[in-house]
Image (cartoon, rainbow, N blue to C red):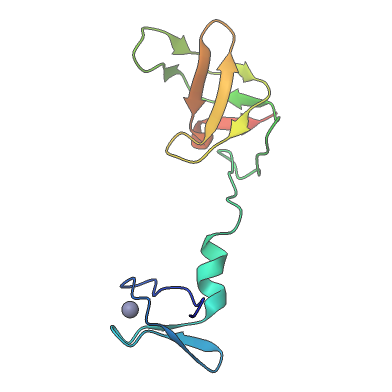
Length: 112
Ligand SMILES: [Zn+2]
């Protein structure tokens, strides 16, 4: 049994080690094991100006945002406390006064 990672290109599990590289015999792809691992590293979520966001941060909405499935609008300048970072298109989970729980896109907020 081998515990080598499968080929990132074709998914083959027949990969083998060649020195520092891993080689796939099926599609001839060669790569360094570190490369694949880096993609699984912690995701960094940044706001509209490049500040790194973290769970529990307070952010300010920088443009009017319509709330999906309702007529509510989150106004530009709204402060959102205690955000939670999540995976996905809307990468911030939060609760906004008068609106409730919703997802925001980090590109539409600014830290602080
Ligand atoms: Zn392959």
